[in-house]
Image 1 (cartoon, rainbow, N blue to C red):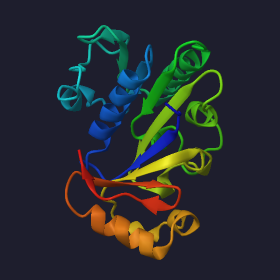
Image 2 (cartoon, rainbow, N blue to C red):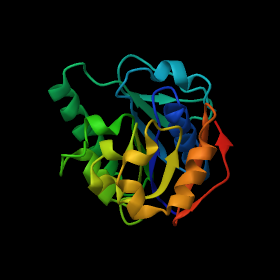
Image 3 (spheres, helix red, strand yellow):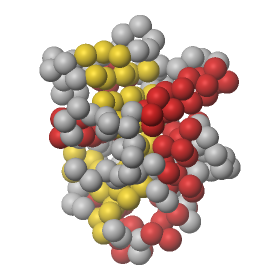
Image 4 (cartoon, rainbow, N blue to C red):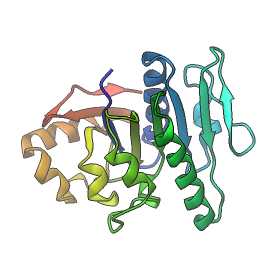
Length: 210
């Protein structure tokens, strides 16, 4: 399986977190021995995770779980103190990038908190710079709008998954990556709740539902 970073964009309650968990689970099952680290910025993982294949659940605040099949999962809820949480994210991403013989998917929910449009460096950007080389790290970064994420993160994402976005036309990001006709397809395909489209190579998929 070729490793591609993904940005998952959409407004609150559009289905981003559920999709990110499902996609990470898909990666884990496809790539033998892969592990998952899910950094749950909102701290709501227990709510969305229960319906994900494998019955992901939160345990305490941190550390590894094992699902029915015995594969390693980490669902991490950071500290309420943002400085402490930043350190926690740095530790987890550093750990992921040191696993040279074990493919890892790192999901950062609400990634704009740690890699906002004005931030040039940080743990999310380090993950984004990693790819199919060694170590193999796949990043999945969720945010409400493309303008919220640092450019250095977005430009490294070959797949962009789009749920419904408020004021979709206001971001200059779209002008650089897709035509207006494609953007209209994106807008039409994401009108219904929990529906999304995938942008890849300048083309848009048919609408799908989580």
